[in-house]
Length: 221
Image (cartoon, rainbow, N blue to C red):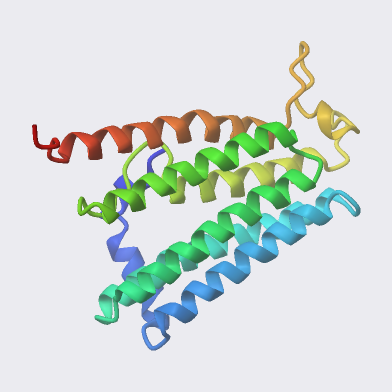
């Protein structure tokens, strides 16, 4: 998945979505996005002590929070209120939201803790390489196999599918670790997505680092 490549095609729709929020501060919208994603993380973590039904509102909040994560930047650009300070705040809140989401999902008991930890490391490395490119004067880098839009959509889909799989269907297994227990494959839907995060995240981080390094001038000899 590389949803960032479809951004231009979505421009007409983004304009309609952003129109009601043009009077709002982009920073306020960034905080709204963070609040929605943080709440989704809390709901996902509470699944451990309550019910997988909480995955449904968590998925909805990830979807809406991801939308606001796009809206804040679009509003800043369309109203000429983009600033270095706002860009910094947006990136800080994004990293905290990413971290909370993965931790919340890991606590839910529907994710292998080791897989979740490696996925989180990959996500943070991917984001770091993008911002580090900007820090060395090469501009913000968004490309790769796993952009932020990709991971929010995939997390939303994984949480929603986990909710569907835990409904009392005749074929639904009773134990979380048996979600995919077919021929000795004991992974949940969320685990599969997190494994993809590990592989695609490391590939994205490495490719971004390689591209930036190739652009930089060699040291004087």
